[in-house]
Image (cartoon, rainbow, N blue to C red):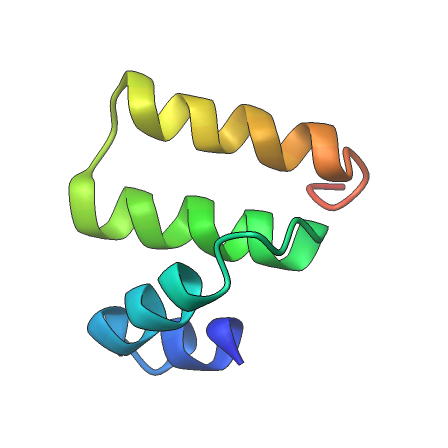
Length: 63
């Protein structure tokens, strides 16, 4: 669901969903969370941390 919200540009709704499911640590949620953070907060060290978390969750996704 988070990916669909992000694809539609519904960043506020995606943020709410990600917050409600903060304990879910699947690679899908990690990548959605990283994209959402980058889109809403921009690049920086915190965004880099989210990216590192995504790569730890599944390093094969970027391929």
